[in-house]
Length: 215
Image 1 (cartoon, rainbow, N blue to C red):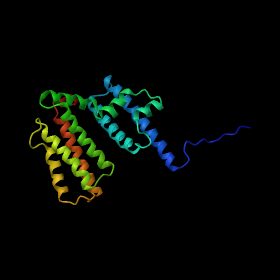
Image 2 (tube, rainbow, N blue to C red; image 1 turned 30 degrees about the vertical axis):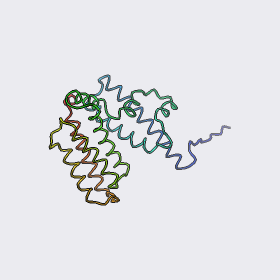
Image 3 (cartoon, helix red, strand yellow; image 1 turned 120 degrees about the vertical axis):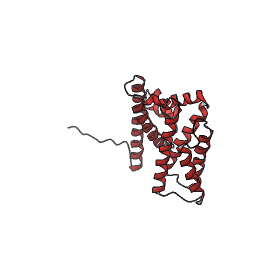
Image 4 (cartoon, one colour; image 1 turned 90 degrees about the horizontal axis):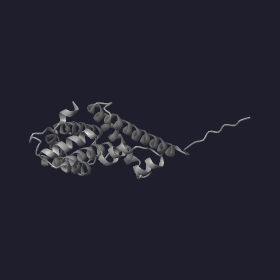
């Protein structure tokens, strides 16, 4: 007579959620590794690659922030589960932007601005949008982030004075300045701000030299 026993990885709901998050992190890293290899081998178009890569990076950043206490090192997580994913680590942890964006950043640096300035602007956009997703909606949290974006955009000489992103960010800064520092954006305001920032970010990426490479 054989007796089968069910073995559980978790003891309570909290532990189950942790293991679910581990599984999701594992899947994101593996998916990014596969995407990077597909892009290098020309199996996927640059435009399709960039869209999927941006989604994976956004999901990774959100999840990594949630797991920062239980997974302080992504590299250690990869080593623990014996994952051969060096390309994914480079894209998710080191670079933080799709390879296509890196190439356009480099092209922009060769024309009129340093790579650090362009890359910094990209990072300011991503950080602000991630912060909104994580619920950092108080005026004294959001306004400094918008200020970073606006200041960075103004340093890039290849952008026209009436660049859409500058106008949108400046309008939101003015709007927030009229509110109290402790005011918290409601769901509708946060959603609208994120939508407009994402639109501005996409316009910024498209304005970089050699943007036609992804058409």
